[in-house]
Image 1 (cartoon, rainbow, N blue to C red):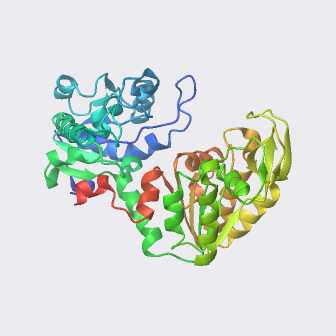
Image 2: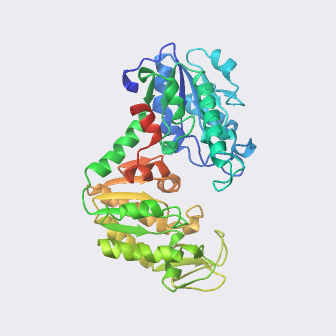
Image 3: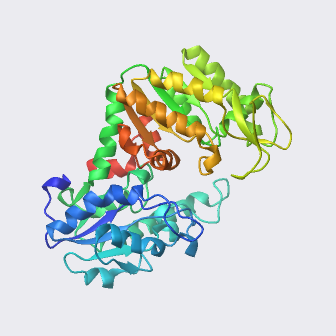
Length: 415
């Protein structure tokens, strides 16, 4: 079913959104992109005369109630975005009464789904290598089905608009869809746009294709890096992983973040890029600081010669120019992950240089896709989000889709 063709009048719609928004220490939202992204779907339901039940996760509470990850903190922000009152159910699995009493045009926000281990469906307190793990897994899958049925019982129709979690086979993103027939389950507008954006990159790659991968750890990006090797012409690796590569090549990285157990992996990536003819671009200089603080003393040094007591927190001027030169010639661009600790204003130059080069390439006809929470926060911070082709709300989901993997959240609805 297509959301445009569905009339929600008199229906209760349960919508899986991705409201896993970043909060500051006072619980204030620092980037509301994900809430704004879901508005077209939520407003369509309300405009039709439906009632709305919103469900999401926040953070990683690991199946336990944790006030730090309560969606109650964002209730007022959601109400403001929708321009109407929002009711709150403090327990997502015990909301049948308040859901049943919802009138057309009313909105209910459920508490964090991940306060229940059944949402993720992983056995708790037992390792994969332990005896009895398979039995525990089977039992948890049965509990997950029941949890999904409970959520489904609140509504007549299910809408998945949470691309950020589409790569997870969770109760609310995939299992719940089994409780609705094909005419009463659908993707939301945001999900449809996200799936289309990935198709645009994969089905019609204009070359050169440049991917920029940032972030602190090589280990979390290894799958996508290896997959991109077969697709891209240029691969820029930046952010914290710079220093793992520098050390692997024999450099001295001071106090910089570094995965010492991944040095061989870094060398393997360098070797594979050479074999496949991919232009691998790594940082050569960095802005080093004597503390992890915006107000730290800084100096520009070679990534291979960072003094003891200092750590690399941003790309240096030579690195920024090298990145920009590659990006500006691209016709297809994927950016996931910043070049430095952009949250500190004094260490934004690397990420800003990437963003500005992407904007220039886009102006010259490139298709640019920016995805992942930190990259999205970057382009928003720099006021450039509307100058790239597409800003994706998904990090892991976007990368897995580009890897060519089937996303459970999409397959549960489209088959």
